[in-house]
Amino acid sequence: QVQLEESGGGLVQAGGSLRLSCAGYRRTFSSSSMAWFRQAVGKEREFVAVSRSGGSTDVADSVKGRFWVSRDNAKNTVYLQMNNLNAEDTAIYYCAAEYTGGSSHNWHSYRYWGQGTQVTVSS
Image (tube, rainbow, N blue to C red; front, side, top):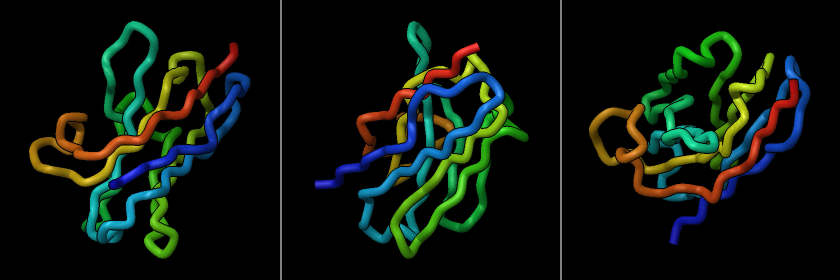
């Protein structure tokens, strides 16, 4: 049973920063792509960032230059550093693991999910 657990969410003022962490995937973590998605109220789940098994990373255009994804294979943990947050970043942020194929930006492409962590940005 794979249980992903996100942490680091919370309430922050606009312009502030948060760092999310996701741990719990221990099945060959270093060779697994790990991704972050988010879902705001009334909106579909959207891609935020991915750390691929080969070492490359990618972030959504909407957060480029503000968000960075990184990983620590020794700790089986993936991080999402979020800077200069704004109200549009308010959402539940989900960690996803075990890429199954297709676009790495598509939430259907991942087998395991965490419960999510709430990020609220006050303006």
